[in-house]
Amino acid sequence: MKNRLFKDILPRVSKPARYVGGELNMIKKDWEQSDIKMVFAFPDVYEIGMSHLGGKILYGVVNEKSNNLMERAFAPWPDMEAIMREEKIPLYSLETYTPLKKFDVVGFSLQYELSISNVLNMLDLSTIPIWSKDRQEDDPIVVAGGPVSFNPEPFAEFFDAFMIGDGEDLILEFLDCLKQNQELDRKNKLLKLATIEGVYVPCLYSVEYKEDGTIKAMLSQNRDVPERVRKRLVQDLDAAYFPDKPIVPYMEIVHDRAVLEVMRGCQRACRFCHAGIVYRPVREKSLETLKRQAQAQLQNTGYDEISLTSLSTLDYSGVNPLVKDLVKTYGKLGIGVALPSLRVDAFSIELANEVQKVRKTTLTLAPEAGTQRLRDVINKNVNEDDLFRAADAAFKSGWNSIKLYFMLGLPTETVADLDGILELLIKVRDIGKHFSRRSVEIRASLACFVPKAHTPFQWSSQNSFAQLEEKRRHLQCHRIKNVKLSFHHSHISILEGTIARGDRRIAQVIYKAWQKGCKFDGWSEYFKFDKWMEAFADLDIEPDFYTLRERSYDEIFPWDFIDTGVSKAYLYKQYEMANSAELTPDCRQAGCVDCGICGDFGVFIDLKEEA
Image 1 (cartoon, rainbow, N blue to C red):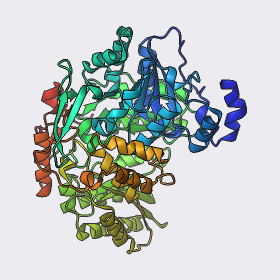
Image 2: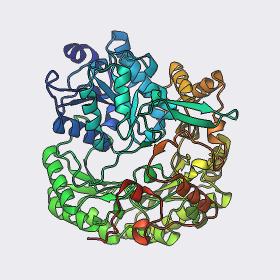
Image 3: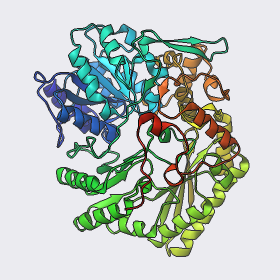
Image 4: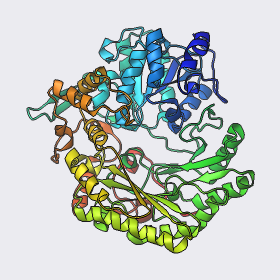
């Protein structure tokens, strides 16, 4: 297949480097000598999937730390897909050009709800049955992981199993279990997998519904299967695997640089944030570990930039000495440092000056809401003075452009909150005018709020399309010099919200929408909202049931059986506090807020001071 691919197929498609493999640091293991063969399948194009840090970690830990094998596959762009279907070329791995159907395990990373149509498309391209119930003994075990898997129910009937939590803590145990039980039939293999902490096997559970459409009960069908699936957790990031030799693509990817994960988790408790809950508790890496990992990656890749990544990088207790050391060590070599996750209350002139010694990077701040009242509702523990000090520091340090993130449709939002966004933008622009001889540019990105599972707002209703569009029009009718507004697609957010809090009945809708041609739904040029609505109508399922409905305290949610370590009682208390705009403090500064994660998992966050 390789010769045919290179000679006849790839010259006919855009960006052929997406499909060739053979990159620097790629690992190609002996197929016959390896135990379990797994392919990491990312349901988006190569340049997005290759920017995903979790995939790099899993790829390295399987290939370097076990006798198992992991290769890679990505969603082909529609031009390549058309040729593959025409030429009857199955979806293949980049390492050995092996069809996905020949692997023991096909593992999808679910980073975004709307990638699910690409999952179905990739399975179909692989000639693997889309529904788990239709797979035979010689079909791969199809699994999924990633943050979206914390509500696996809308996708449950497409997957044989889900891996919940930190994948590097679970993946080798999962593969070893398959190796030890190779002689068993498919059903009993899945039963063995279901006994592993962090593994959810949907076919071993049944769901009962009430007349009003809400869930009556979810029951395990085997006494060896737990009623609740507890997430896996890496307790010591210093001891955990991290790739020293990540793959370097031939083409430019979205995040084309070396990456350091400085910590995992976030103590800030923003009430809208799904990641802030499911990745708890906060775990930091030591400065020594990060310096070593930076040196190894830069030596093995040739990148000229290194990004410090986490949910809130400037909350890392050693961020100042780390940045200063990296700039001092590598700046003279032309290697820059990027800080992609900045909070408006954690910015400093000193750190900004350190970062821009080599090159200016994009500066993005996230006030999220336009008024203090609404920031208190969502527990964004910052105020206008914090933002203005951050802007002041940035403009003094030489930036002429700042990007600000806001959300539309937050619970309790009013017209005054929308006007507050415009007022903030004007004030930040005026600060820039004071310091800059050149004209400054303020860009505001406005996303639509989507209530997510396992957050305090899981009980909240979501704004309708009409409400979101009315708010967009209200903001757009005010034109402000040197301020640019960009809006996320409201229809995309509505569908995302429907799936994010969906149950097993949504699977039929997903399948029907895919049959109607839906794929690459996260890409506006391919998103077909009308086809999705047709799919809901064909199946007599009302999306408003999942988006516009306010939930009661005692409703059973589809995702309640997933144990994140954060109690539902804590989340509801936060929901009540949101409605009265009460704040919850940073637990690393003010002490435990009794969310449940530390005691439940035997991990206690360090109340660390800056190194």
